Image 1 (cartoon, rainbow, N blue to C red):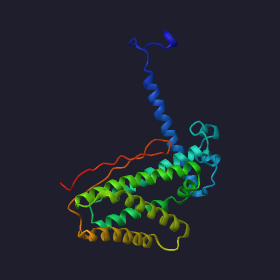
Image 2 (image 1 turned 30 degrees about the vertical axis):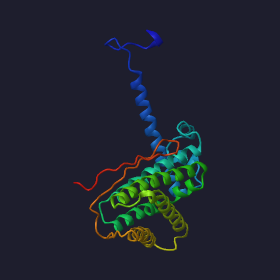
Image 3 (image 1 turned 60 degrees about the horizontal axis):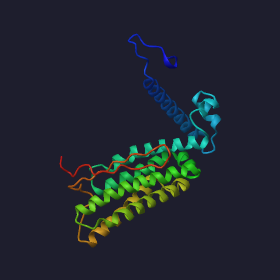
Image 4 (image 1 turned 60 degrees about the vertical axis):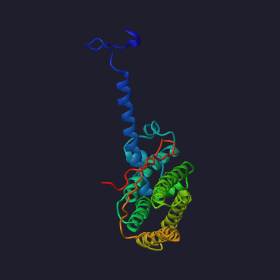
Length: 252
């Protein structure tokens, strides 16, 4: 028998693809376990955590950990990808809620601030780490691209020029991120206060733009149309892409 593979009772060799699939799944699961262990260490120790501390938390030796991550940078990048999933899991439902504009904006901003408040050390290690900065930038691109599609849909629905959608989206994302980083470092006011200030500022821009074009939107009444978006992180390199789609127009 070629390659020393013994036949099964049915005369066919065991599937190598099956073994490879199971092994790949096992490696992915182990890698995810180690990322969660690193997240716990990061929360307790801070951005200057070490690989050995992660290995101890995971109950393995450093060589075992290095079978799954080439170095600390690789581990930090994987932690960033986990952080992206956490953020999108919170942000997407807020952005896509069928509520009035004002509470929808408020919930979306609070989702971002709440994630940073729950994982402050993760944000700092990403913001100050070479590969981590790429993850932060990729997250901005994911959210801005998706928000641009959402704003464009609404502008067209109101018969307005959608050309403003993309610069608006990047402006809003930059505003929220920069303010959130300031708040995370200073903590000079409550999260609720920051959320409310940002909500009023974003809404004032939208309302002012609409009124200049004789479109009046009640901030506390749900819109008849309901535009939603879908976002998903990309590959493991940290350069994520978004899958942006219109899903529904209010017909239920």
